[in-house]
Image (cartoon, rainbow, N blue to C red; front, side):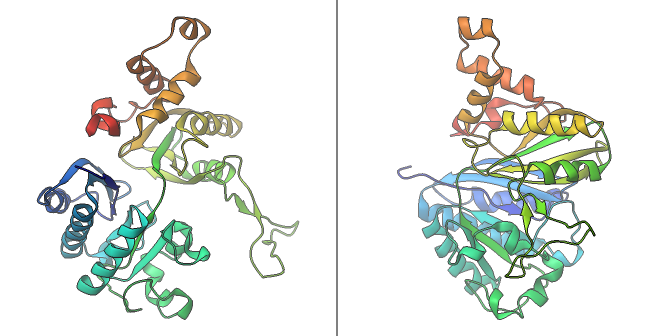
Length: 334
């Protein structure tokens, strides 16, 4: 491989093994692409897939995976804990590929495409949550609004596949913190406190305060480069703060974990562990490992393996499922 591009599409299916395998096989069949990770979640009803390759091959693999998902997934019956706008919810990679992917998918598969983050054509579409607002259920009405004309494709509702959001971003770590309570409202309260966008400001009467443009005034959260929401995981009967670390060098897993723990304790519960969905850069765990080192460990020094092991232990990354560095750290997978 010469110039390597990564793609991390998220599919709105986390329960049907045949559908997930069909998507995976469509990627494996493309030359010069390496499938690194497939991570389904039954509660979220969502699968995160990671693959790398040369630019043209990555676009081909993303297209083939979208085609497979469009065939197998019907959004009309989809339910899950995670926000989504379509069968192939989001496809992040570099901007030039986002445009190439968008043109091809909208033309061939008749799926409306929106561009976000660094590929966004307008500032108001940079935030993924803004594009997803209303989710799949509100998409048909949204497409009738000229302000929400897709970046690629016609403003026509595809009831089976919905829409797809494609774009470019820094390496995002999908990082979730587990609470020792099943109360999802507590998890949501913590999410509102920590996420960068915060929450709407309310006056003494409990009404949302608007600015001169009629927009809701926000009270910022305590962590930068963080998106978060609270969810309930039925399999484990616990609540979880589901977090996207959009720039781990600004806010890494250790910072997010300690802040969630702090907020949880103030609400009468505790953070007991966490999980990384998909892959993580090695550096994120090395930074966390150094953060957790004792004075004695700093004096003696720890190897790369030792730092990773310390981070895994202190973050409780194996609480729900065993964390295998060889299968979860992207550098080990290449």
